[in-house]
Length: 318
Figure 1 (cartoon, rainbow, N blue to C red):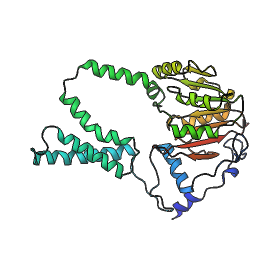
Figure 2: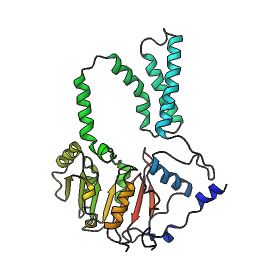
Figure 3: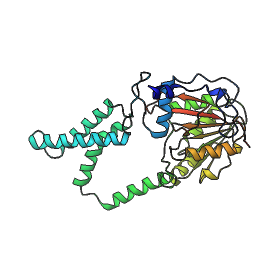
Figure 4: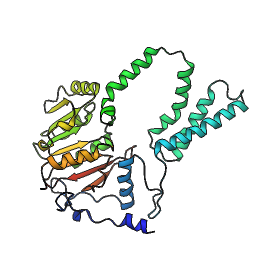
């Protein structure tokens, strides 16, 4: 009971101290307008933990009921082990009903249904459905090694950042884009930076929504970078660079947007806090900064149950 009380005793955001100087974070958007209220406290707590671990930490929804479910990958693995064992037993018991490799589809279908029932994110549905059938097909079919090498090369050029910085390629959803555009200050000369811009879709949408803004993106993986350069060739107000965003100067931007992973968020916060100007915004899609309360959060109704974490910078603390 004391643990529940501790979790629910959260101070108002406008009284939270800056982590360096002790000043209040303030409760206001960059352009001076008050934001919409944060989601309900239990939901906000779940969103905060989901941003750090990729899985809801508190369930079910009712206040005061707290549980600690397994990580998503562990839950999926257990489901596949159980479904594979059940499917193999049925195939051995009823060989005429499940000839050949049809047991794989029984396993995949069962795992997909269990995943939905367990509340896994929707993108786990095709993974659960096709994982075991794909493994069986790879073992049964005579596939040339060149196919595997080609697939590896394609994955490599798309996910260089995943190996270098533990940041895989994530694409911002249309719903998140609309929510983000709604947060951005509506003024000419806005400077916007997308860290890990991927194929450039978000930059195009922001440039179209805010014609007077200067938009820049930086991407580490070579193939997404080339795709973004080609897509943005007609947008003169948008620039894309190939490289590591850790070397970028955040002080040049009014808004820095990131859709990374839990691993670099602490380092990103330290860089933003030391470089970004007072009043500028750091916005993270899905992943929170451990131990740092956002100025406000915006839950997004997309299939990923995304949350935008928004921090309004209070200046350089001495």
